[in-house]
Image (cartoon, rainbow, N blue to C red; front, side):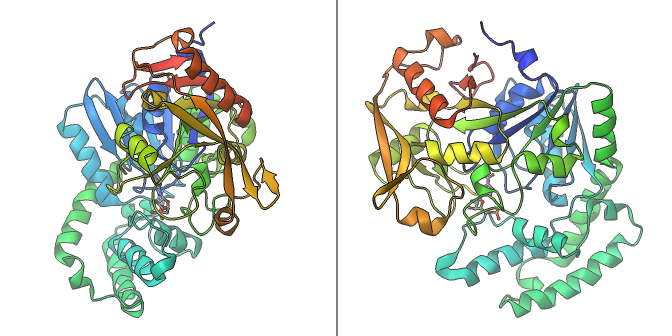
Length: 435
Ligand code: IMP
């Protein structure tokens, strides 16, 4: 019997990503948010980019959670997120201009602020890395998290301080010296200080009335038995600790990031939904064992519209990777999978799935890290499937999917070892099959 959407999203649920990000989590969260009382963005910052298509149009969001489109809900930016105040104010203004009914959006006082020097440091660090560059989004994410760990910089709550501008200017002067020491130029080469100060003042006005202790609100909502939905950024294979270091982001997309950002603990969590794309993509550098730098990759890129929502970079594309996805799902605490973008495979004659990595005489089926050096020396082992060659976008019941598509889904489900309860066959909310 089909699972009812309302019961699927009941309780405290985290929607995360088992792969390298960009699996279609924005659509998944937009779907789940219809049933949520509270939606919390848990990690990352404006490096994320989710595309949401609903009755109001198509929206590309970075910092504002994809769950913003439920006007009945409360939308929170948790403490594990780094907040670029200009980006936040800009995105909110754009949404308000479009007269879309929105959730009330509040921010944690404990989130670190991404300020102009973080972005400059991000791009200078990348330049200085040369061949070893990570391919960051350039949104200042790594340097802001580094400052946070170093207990430097400013937090969202500091915007409420009447001395905020004085503190900002003091740090600006310090950071100017840091940037010169990194081989960068003077700040005038990068931005107009007066203009930025003016924009920051405006953004501060927008943000100040929205600053709260999110942990307290989340605790109270949980006590009231409300439905809570966590919205993670990026993906498990980019996790700072579990991903293929150093080709990772600076936060934790999985269940650990959810706990850090909310104050909830493992015993409070009812379900972790792992958004999983029916094939693999990656942006930036780092290992991607099943990458197809050929006509298959081109097909997936074009049909899947695989262009980074944040950077506009073309995503690297390849076949579904069971060992990597299983590892990502396991380390991020996933309990149920949502298989996204199945329809992208509709036109393929043949579809491959990686079941293991061959290194010398040994085949590895289970990963305990995704080490870049190890990945360089391996060869993926594939199982080949015949394509179903039928459009699936209009299908709404699992049983109506082509038999070969169902076999593909079952194979992935068995390989990853977690039930697939949602199959997405198109960008619209309606193109969602509950199983
Ligand atoms: P950063 O998070 O900008 O420091 O980038 C670190 C790595 O994570 C780079 O490979 C980025 O391309 C990747 N990355 C960051 N955010 C996202 C995302 O939302 N989707 C996919 N990849 C991301």
